[in-house]
Image (tube, rainbow, N blue to C red; front, side, top):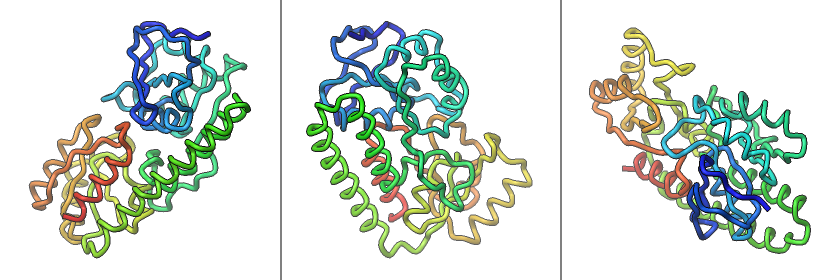
Length: 277
């Protein structure tokens, strides 16, 4: 049976009902997810029979985080690896690890999701409840493959998870109904899928991982004023000096968000509330 080694960050997320630390041994099989929100999806559907390990720790960015060698060794002992499939970490060291671990069952949960037309290079596909439902079904299919005898439990938890996603979607639509300012500014491109699902427009300060030049900032200020931007979203995982400057120049309100939170539904509702105020 799998045991968690000291350097592997593990989080049994709230939807799974319990938590263990990186140093606590376990007799339960381990499933690995690349990021915290995905780990929460896996935990919710897998249930209490598994521990869920997360490669990217809270507060780190999946675009630049480098998993430790020890984490990657531990990854090979997991029953399955769940990944979005578009994140920097996934396409570098984790991809190489998967190639050298032929027995590791790897699931790209976002396979089949069409990127939003105006989302650009925004890999945060889980900011859309519709995409989250798609990911949940992919997780369910993999779990049923690993453990056919547990299918009834996975079916039940999938239905509960989909009801939760539907309730989040309904609440967001209710909050955004009648909102006239449909354009917002994001310091880092993280809400493209959210914007596409709810008829919004995301402007981004950061392009290709870099903040804009002074001329680019001036253009964004003019664009924000022209489009009536009232909210600027920033993330603690990314610097936001230019975004804060633009907010001061336009009178927009700065709102800190965490798209990498395990409480994905609550975080999307906070974003909707910020836009509705």
